[in-house]
Length: 79
Image (cartoon, rainbow, N blue to C red; front, side, top):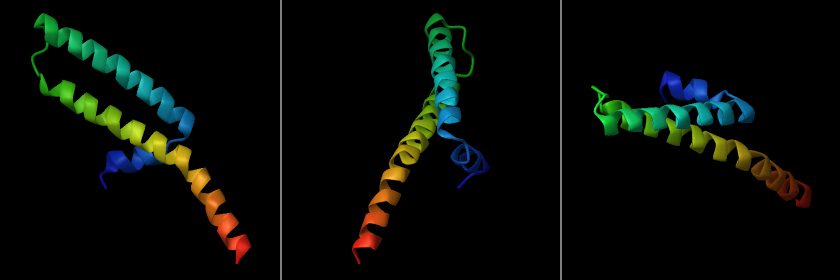
């Protein structure tokens, strides 16, 4: 796991939502620059898209994490 992924994984759910919305805005700006021919480095678009996907993945993991722990507790109580 890269240093960036470890940092993103340590963020809270609210921080991940904030970072996700910032990345969506950045991605929009990059797409507009690319469409108008102002973007010199077009690989920034795909890098921003991948980073947004990572953040959304971590959001999903954080949301499902409490559900998994509750299911594990129910299983442990049943034994």
